[in-house]
Length: 165
Image (cartoon, one colour):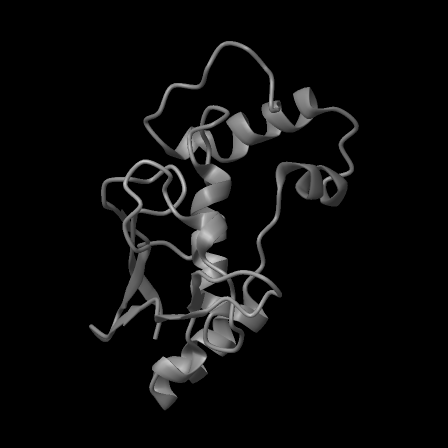
């Protein structure tokens, strides 16, 4: 069973729902600074880790919509797994407001097993980590490798500048 589609809504900078079709074996996320690359990875990680830990959701909430976070994946066998959340009184001394947390108990056994397996086996590498793997000394060297070996397979024209920050 593999992830087929990722859906995110009201998560950090994603106010509207986005659907990402994950057809391939690997996923490369490439975009401008501030376009949501890290948020997309954080959404996946949050969903994966939510099956085994209570995680506060306040820092991930979209500040404009203030709506509940929605993250879900559809698998190749047509299962839909959505982020489970619960609201509890804040246990911090002196606070009288509710907090929203992920709810590990909200998942069924199959969902929990699948998410736990993904949490423990998923590798997310930044370009800096890939530079070390390829023994490259500058981001410009990585940019050339990226364009030649990865972007060559897509119809997306690369930007002219060679900056990866």
